[in-house]
Amino acid sequence: MKLITAIIRPERLEDVKAALFEAEVTGLTLHRVAGHGGETVAFESYRGAPLVYEFHEKVQLDIAVSEPFVEATLAAILKAARTGEVGDGKIFVRPLERVVRIRTGETDVDALTPDPMRFP
Image (cartoon, rainbow, N blue to C red; front, side, top):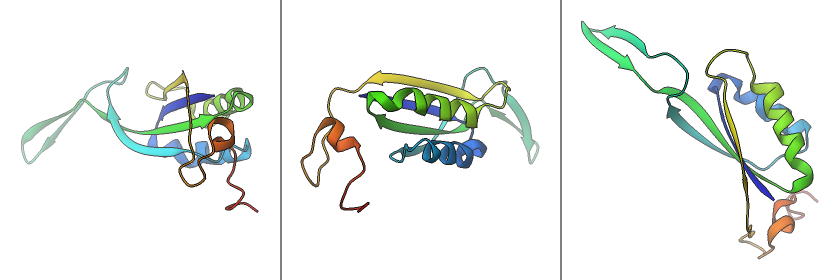
């Protein structure tokens, strides 16, 4: 099992979500985040006062997948999130030691598969 964390442009979220669903990856958690990477610092003026935007708005997706879904998840994110410009984001893949579905107590891969109570 792996935990895939993707930091992407907010405007690419709908495309990434559609690509993930097409790859049959349906479980994800979304966070609105701000960060600083290779993008340039933006300078603006508001009512005569200078403003410096060092951090850029991004979306962070956390996706727990079993081994057979790792490559399909990465391919879906790369295909849908890439614009070719600086600031497209990053993907981090980390080992996932344990998963527990709270409602049923199912663990690991059983907890990652679609819930039969929700998808009969």
